[in-house]
Length: 159
Image (cartoon, rainbow, N blue to C red; front, side, top):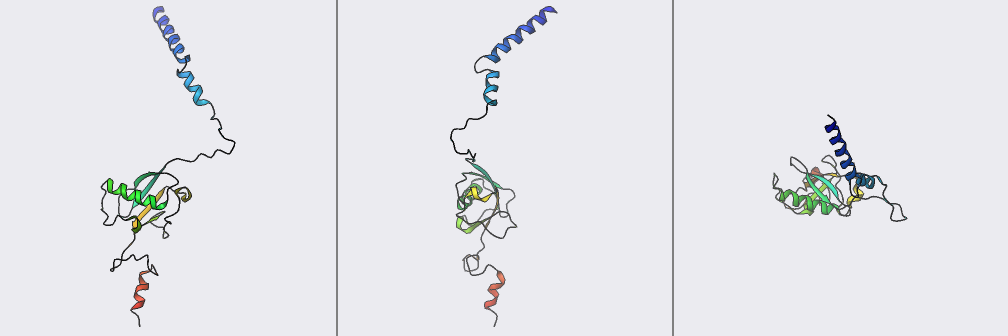
C-alpha cells in the first residue's frame, strides 16, 4: 500500500514540474489571464474584420451564408449571395442572375429595399431577404417605372 502512495506522489511531482516549466500549463494560463495592452493612445474600438451574413432568397428553403468585409456594399452582398446560391446548386433555380435585377430587404415583410451603395457596417443587421424585381410583358422592370402600384397601369385604359 505504501508503494502505491509513493508512486502517486512521484507522479504528481513530475506532473507539477512539467506544468511549471516554460510553455507548460501554468505558463499558458498566466498569459491568457493578462489584460490586453493598448497599442495606441486613441480609443480602441474593436471592429470585426469579417461578418457572417444570412441572406434568404425568394422561394428558397433556407438562407445562404456569406462572409464579407464590413466595408463592402449592398451590391456586393447581392452579388456574393447569388454566386453562393448558384455554387451550392440550390432550388429553385433563378432565371436571372444579374445583381442589378435583385433587391435586398431587411425582411420579406419590409417594403423598402436597401440602397446599393450602403455599407455593411451601417446596416445594423446580419439577416437579409433577397428577391428578383418583377418584369412586365415588355421585359422592363416594373419597379423602374413611375409607379410601383399595379393599379396605376390600369388608369391608362380609363376614359
